[in-house]
Amino acid sequence: MLAITGNFLISISLNIQKYAHLRLACQANQKPYYTSKLWWCGIILMGLGELGNAAAYGFAPATLIAPLGCVSVIGSAFISVLFLKETMRAADMLGGTLTIAGTYLLVTFAPNVTQEFTATKIQNYLISWPFLIYVILEIIIFCILLYFYKRKDVKHIVVLLMMVALLASLTIISVKAVAGMITFSAKGKMQLTYPIFYIMFIIMVTSCVFQVKFLNQAMQLYNATVIVPINFVFFTTSAIIAGVIFYQEFQGAALLSVFMFLFGCLLSFLGVFVITRNQEEEHLQVPYIDCGHIPGKGTLYSLTSYSSPHVDCIYSVCVSYYFMLSTLSVI
Image 1 (cartoon, rainbow, N blue to C red):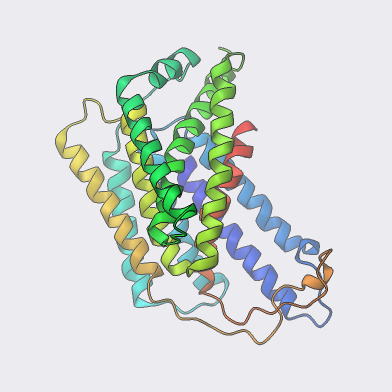
Image 2 (cartoon, one colour):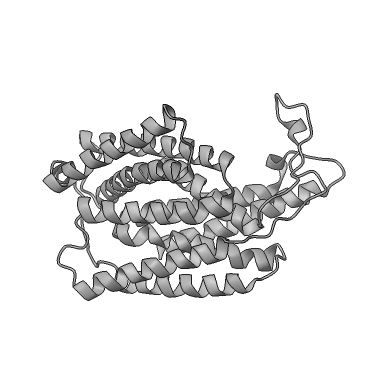
């Protein structure tokens, strides 16, 4: 419920921010977006949503929380119809149905594992052979991709988002460890005095920063309608693998439960692809953001074309999710 509510709040907040930008664009006297009370309401809602997401990792398996990011996708798609008066497409209805069905299967058949994450348990997980082998393979693959990215100047979307996904697995592991230790400490058994807490925190922040770097590179080269579904699939897959290997979340699970869980993931993936594919581009003839109010900028920028509002919102989730998660986990 924390994850679903958090992702739904994120979809609402992003539509509110979009609406605030559009209102400012229609005004005769352009004002910076940060002077809008409506925009700040959206930011506050996003903070609450990200806080809910971060807290959810302390209470539930990572293999369940990560796929529930699809709630923000479907939420943005339908809220934009009501709030921004966007046209509802048949693809939105089909994608939403697939995503809801997948989410139901995810929640129903996710591993029902209750773990208390002490510093000692996290240390034992870190030195386990399955995780060490996994980390070595991940480092090798990441170095190969980084070589092609840096030396061969390969900027293919799969290369960029694969690096994001590999970093995301470390983010999921560290976020869950940090959130779990904070949750356990709140119950009266202090875990924040152990060095492993700060090691995991550093890993969390570092992996978040580099994910934002590669996501921004992908954003500059490719359309959001391409980035969103691929990134969602890669991120969710890496989170599931990390949860299975590091936290052993499917240990002892029935084969039918595993199959139905993976089938739910597949339905969610298909739903996201259907919602984001073939988005019609629109053209704005009015300024979108007045950069003249931003120090160092002396020109007025206009947004000549942009993806459907809920696609912008969905992509923003991808970037903001990694960046804000690290800060809010500390809170």
